[in-house]
Image 1 (cartoon, one colour):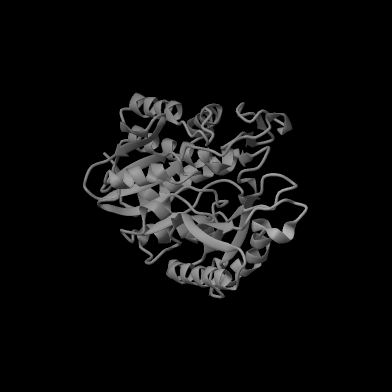
Image 2: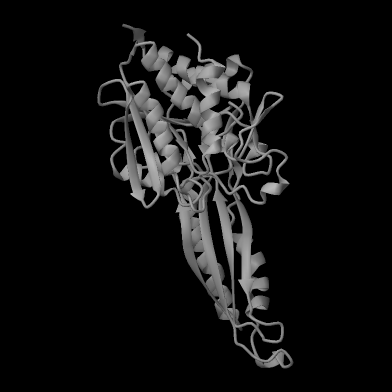
Length: 382
């Protein structure tokens, strides 16, 4: 049995039509829609609401303590100025085999595929020797609070494998960069703009400190992820043009290719700040505002080998690492669970205007996952 266009594409289009922009990250409408689909087919489903308007949806098929998790997030980044879109971002229009809309690639295509997979297992009365869980999360785009809530509720207990459906163009991802976000606060002294020598410019202080922050980027190069990076993504300071600014802050986005680099980067940043403060005249301090670990597959079990083979059969031979973070970073590290990051969608479609995904790639992905589960876990018809 193959999963067809009719099995998966209408679900994808309906999900795109449900706005889940983050902020505000309200996902209850999407969660209710998914729950209703599963319950129509007799698939056990529950909603985990962990904040007002924000919820995960968890569906299960099969029996037993050992689980396989298929996970994807329901929230999307904002559409921005909708007049700039060639096709309306929440209309889910189809043109030349492409489905357009916010979240089509990141990552409602994979979510729709996972839903179709569980339905196919149910409809074909497949007998499992593992329990398959679908976890649809919220807040992945901001903070990953949804996957954290699921983990705290025990979803990873007894989990044997996690498939994260983030877009990879159906290439097999075995690693992802970790994130370390630092807010740097620079303090000066205010004075009249006509007598700047009587003050200390926090903006000038920040400008001299920013190049030094690059010294904390490690030289280590990872086999698939390459080197760690730094982006200064935001800066703000000052009040009026004729006032010497007494405060400025900027934010550093470090992406680290191995988690054992993280503490060393923190130490180096503190050394940079201490040296800066010693030299004066401005003073600086830091605040860690977000951090998630880097991930790397630690052991290759049968399901990973099968996914690699399936990808190879459709011409996806390259094993990749992901520059961005996923919910896997919140779920996996404490358990050291085998995982793969793999899903439909081109990497250049992440967070862009006129986001689209290829319809056939979503269908192919659903069948790839379905076939992999059957081959790996010896599922048979009753």
